[in-house]
Length: 261
Image (cartoon, rainbow, N blue to C red; front, side, top):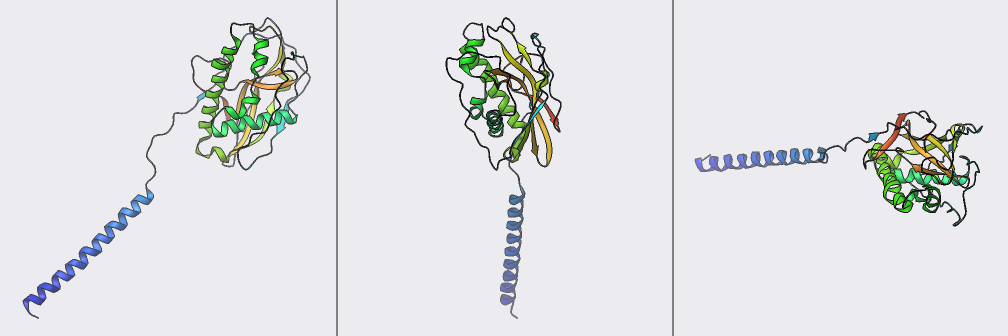
């Protein structure tokens, strides 16, 4: 073989080696790209509730035992229509039941709000503004309802959603535990009220996520005309405008404590 031929043969071999090295490099780059996850830090953990002391209530314990309302798991978040209270009617002392279709619908809507991280689906499960205007003997109760009560509710829903994490839409509400035996009648003149209502603290939303049974609390349910409504979700009192998850727990947790407004 002449020197010129040998030189061309070496160049061809070098070209094939370079091509092979390039292909291997490209394959490694593609493999690394496929395994890389999205960048970004973890969200801050939600605040947990340390229930603050509330003004005393006029205790009238009810003989009704703890109620556990089953909830039918759904394939996706859903909102069930909840009848609005009739306008212009006044409070009654009718004791609310936690085993009605209306209450189950309210809790379904509350859970949907948590799953998607927005409070609006649970608006009809929240204590009605017209009722709050009748109950509270304070300046501008409508402003307090919008700026404090429902605003805090929205913050609590958002942080409860964060607690569920990326698998929120796969979490399933199993049942709602309401410690009805601990309910008390809060009379006029207590907690800046001009009208009384039934109150129960520490109900539990029991759900299943990743095969594990877990629960969070509802800080305060109060009544209007024989129906329970959420009035404080994460906490009755807070020191600033931040969301709170009420006593998150493995398993069903412990309902209560009694008392509060």
